[in-house]
Length: 156
Image (cartoon, rainbow, N blue to C red; front, side, top):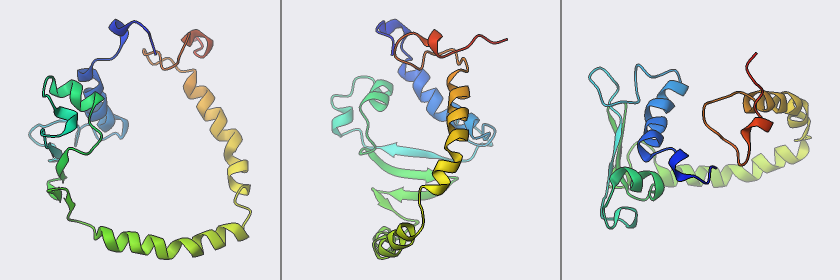
């Protein structure tokens, strides 16, 4: 959000936010988020012969700014091979999609019968207040376009 590129997060910082930061945000930093002894074995293998990595210049930059997920070939979660050669191994995807297609007419019928806005309207003020308080919390990063001072209140 800052026009001065020298204030932008680097691709290394962004990858750290996605891995270590993601683990920390889930209170799982002692289990996942790093390739280290004692941590759960999780990772992906990428095909570097894709548009996102051609020509291969800076893997971190290309991973952060170019990769869409299309290059992911293999995925390992908690030591279990979940996807190999772009094929999901743990779920029958075709069956799952068929079940979803079959369930949707009943889903929409039930939701049309109910006042589907009753619950969202009831909780909206609370969600808006949570958002407002979160938006006012200083993070050390400017998360907004323009002057953050109009959003963030000083810590008292």
